[in-house]
Image 1 (tube, one colour):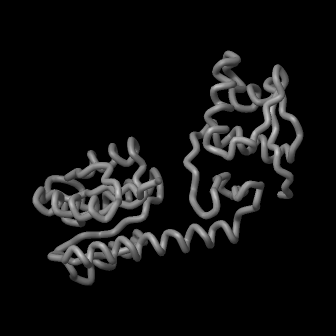
Image 2: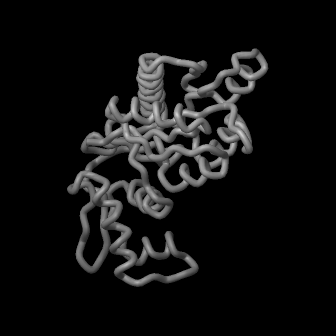
Length: 231
C-alpha cells in the first residue's frame, strides 16, 4: 500500500523529531528531516516527496519561502508552512508560493494532523480537476494528460522517467499501431544508438508501471498499446 511521502524542513531538532513521530503515527512516510536550503533541494531530487512541511525561519540558510521557490523550479510539490511569524509581510510572501496549508507555532499535534489531511484533500481535488480538464481515458482506468504528457491511474499520478514518458507518448500517439523497435530507438536516442538490451529494459520499466496487458510486445519487431482509445 502506497504511503504519502513527507519531507520535513525544520531547523529546531526537538520540533522536527516531534513532527516526525506524529507523522509516522498517522501512517505517513517521512522521507527525511533537514535543516537548510541545500539539504532540502538534495532531498527533493533524491526522494521526490508528495508534501513538504517547510519552516519559514531557517537559520544560516535561505529562508523557507526562498527554499520553496527553489524547489518549485524542480517540481511543484505541495507545501505546508510552519512559522512563528504571523506578520502580514511574511504571510503575503508565503501566499505567493501557493501553499496548501499554514501552521503557526506553537501548534498542537491535532492541528498538524488536520492541516495535513486537509492538504491531501486539496491535492486530490486538484488532481481530479486536472484529469477532468486535460486527460483522456486510455484503458484499464489509466488516464493520459496530453498537455503535460503525464500518466494517472484513476486520480493517482504515476511517476515516469524522461525516457519512459517519451516512450509512452510515442505509443499513445500511434493509436494502437505497432511501433518498431527501430522507430523507438530513433525517436528516443536519435544521436546515440543503443543496444537491444537497453531498449528492451526501457520497455520493461514502463510496462511494470502499468497494467501488464497495457503494452503488447511483438517479438523481434516492436510493441503497441492494447486498449482502444481516442485522443
